[in-house]
Image (tube, rainbow, N blue to C red; front, top):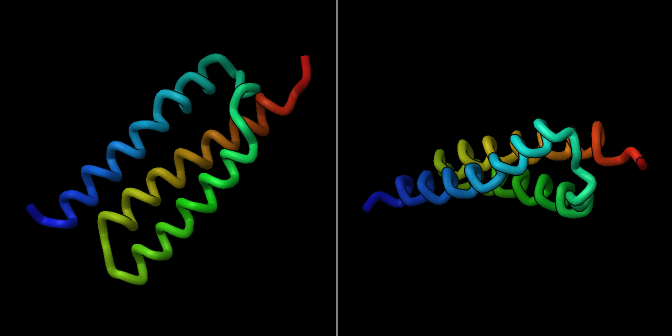
Length: 87
């Protein structure tokens, strides 16, 4: 099996794992239970994966980490928009 194919499959699974959280946060307009620390750490990790993918010339790592990075940005945006407010 091609290593890039394995990378794409793994990347799809990681990206899809964030999708339910993005959808739920957007629909409920609530992110109080999402850790700001997790959000920032996740973004930093994805950015480093993108840089690493670029350094080793891995299209699957670059593309899938970029998609996951954008989804993590969405969660962080929603966290600042809806989760920082106190009821």
